[in-house]
Image 1: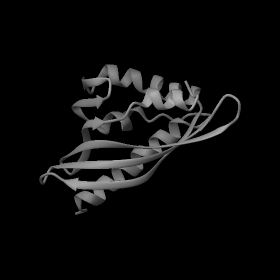
Image 2: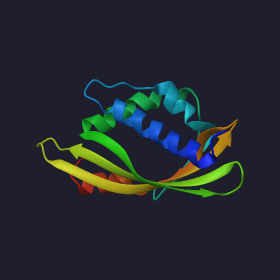
Image 3: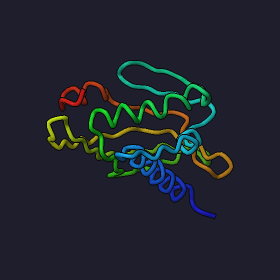
Amino acid sequence: MKSPATLIRRFFAAYAKRMNDALLPTPKIDTPGVIDSFADYFVEASPHGVNGGKNGVLLRLTIPRGFAFYRKIGATAMRVSSLRITRLDPLHYLARVGWDSRYVTKRGIKKRIRFTNIYFVQLQQGKPRIFAYITGDEQKVLKKYGLT
């Protein structure tokens, strides 16, 4: 049996691959894979507040739109640059994921944005699922770099 840390590392590698596949010029969107990455209910916290959502039809509909938005603003890649995993108890883990994102502006200028998100992950039947995450002010950063 794989260790929880190994499971979580593989989980975020697959999570990043799904994002990168969806950012291709001819996108390959794995909606079931994205849906399966989240718990039945999950919470997002950012400088704009705290929101919760059910993993269901609405999420399924917003996934392709979300990836379309990122392609529209020039996103070309999202790579995991670092991953620190903290065990909270046998089933719950905190994962600090450093992201190295790449963009090309409408003028053809390449941009690189690095940021860290915090994910709370629960192992459900040995499978990691995100039940909460914390992000910075993404819209402010995208605007700063001239992407929105």
